[in-house]
Image 1: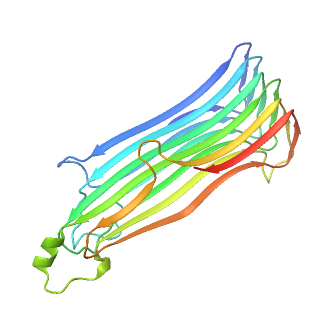
Image 2: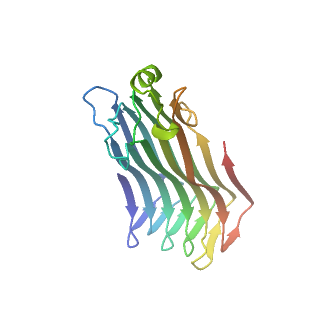
Image 3: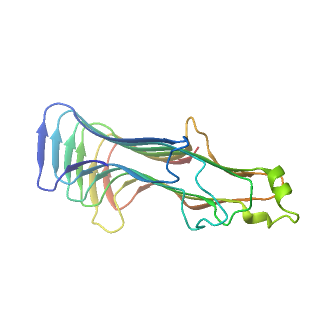
Length: 276
């Protein structure tokens, strides 16, 4: 985990540009014969400003997580535990100006980017009680909470972007199943279960705090959920002509760009929430 905190008692003054950058990355390639049978990882990059920051230059707050996970041939047998989760990933990029903060700058750019690519594959020549279970929770969060004071002579941009690509597959040796079983087993005895939570949120102000005071020139607030640039979108499959079920549950897909309880003095405002 990578974290940068400007505490509520901290004061930072500068006449130059200020840049705070939190980058967290993880690459795991478990495709060799001696690799572990599961992945359980939490990757976070956070910036939290709660104190006072003053500069006549540009203030940049950027948090980025980049995750690349590969898992091949975990042990899936008729007797293995169906409640095992073979791959569990929680990925968060967060940039927050808290309600206790006071920020004065020439301009302010806030960005949170979370990128995750997952490939999980398995093979079987027999029916299974176990499943290939994949759980992914990805968040990109960027915002200014109520009670904060932000005064800028230039522009403000707040961007939250999450990109996800998943390829989850079980390949069944159909010929071996036919040879071993005089009566075919139930169709759903080979399963891929994929559960996904996705959040991209960018905001000014909130529902619970007092009115936020913001002065700036042009203001842009955008939240984007997109396919991964190289890994593509989301795919779950059982490759068999005889049996198998692939179940994909998107438990949440929350993409929001909001302004709430804020007094704004500015030249223009643009809000965008996108699925790409």
